[in-house]
Image (tube, rainbow, N blue to C red; front, side):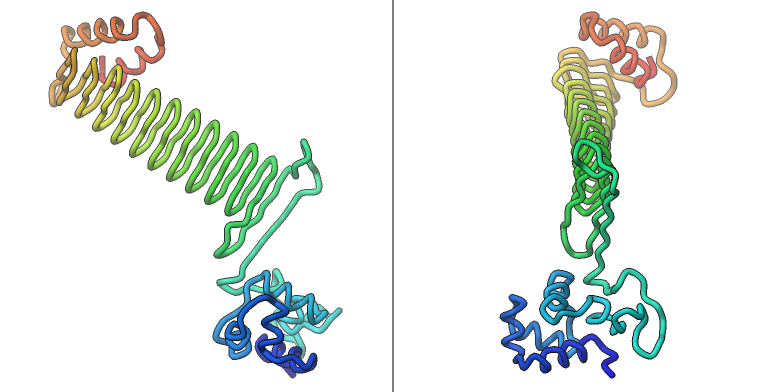
Length: 267
């Protein structure tokens, strides 16, 4: 009795009177690929497994695991395997909820190893995720979380959105190791208004190193430059200077921003 996938594949091919080259043409691969499958040197991916099962008229359980049709168990008993088949290069999982909203499943989860498959739903989780709430390697949504995240609120290694946070962040308000935006907060910042370690801004910069028309920090360069002490609290004179400079630069606009920048520099 066949106990290995490669043995079952070899037997099914021979029963059909096919050569390895014939089977390769049916599936759409090379003869060398079929030869490797039958020798156990490699495994077909999920798409090719499905094509093989359809052609031979057997289930994936039978083709891959050797389960007898209708029994749910491998021949001769043995350990039960969940999710049909697991192999490091072939794993895949997909779930779609029956409930929908605006024509989209409420929840769509689609994950696959070594492949970029898409999940699209109100809540989407996948290699590529698109939804109101999305989580994935590549993620797009209103609330987006991922390695590369795009959204109104985006959080990821690379994040872009109205509000974004990540290793590299770009947005109206951006916070991260590298931050780019209207308001930037982070280690290295390029923004209209910025605060962080090293900051270059078109209007106001607050940082250890700051360059802008109004620059506040320990190493500063700008039309108006206010140098802060290396340590210790700010003097009342310095606090007043910062208050006046921020009020003049902002011209009475963005009171919340003025309050935030004053708080960040201890003024």
